[in-house]
Image 1: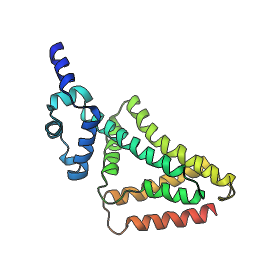
Image 2: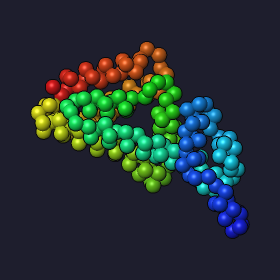
Image 3: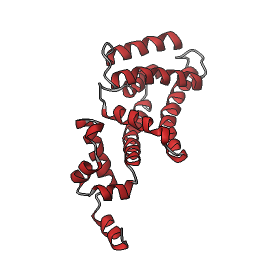
Image 4: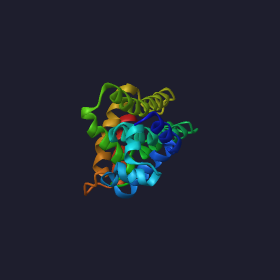
Amino acid sequence: MTAGGVRAARKNAPPREDVLVAAMATIAERGLDGLTMAGLGRQVGMSSGHLLYYFGSKDELLLQTLEWSEAALGARRRALLSRRGPARERLNAYVDLYVPDAARDPHWTLWLEVWNRSQNAGPQERERQAAIEGAWHRDLVALLAEGISRGEFRAVDPDRFAARLRALLDGFSIQVAVGLPGLSRQDILDHVGEFLSEALT
């Protein structure tokens, strides 16, 4: 692309967030199979070549879309955890936010695809994925530590317990996200609630 072509592409490109919003809306409506660079380009008024110029690859587009979606979830998570009240109520809210809404939940669909593609990712991309996971982990550790210090939870190692709880949530959530029969979202919340009652009180 010539220097003039680059300048024109930058001038005519929609805001980055518009592209990410359109990508997420497409995943929600048609799934990942419905997300193509050409189709996305038509939605935002860009050619697929311009999209590839800005994002470099579809993998990078998906990762940036996941980061954008996670930023919104992170804001909701922090708002939930900053509420006043018992730590267990906020822990329940954390779990409720974590678990997918239903089969083909767009955020979980995207998360699974990004992690599947990460087998060939470079170290920088892996660090960005680790940052997403790290934010969920740190918030959970802080909440557990608060509950322990206030005497609401029995004394456990917050970091180790958080790692185990998130592994449990991931395992259950993947089953819902891919639509396996026999396990509803409410079933998961009930299972996790029983586990937390047994493990922390």
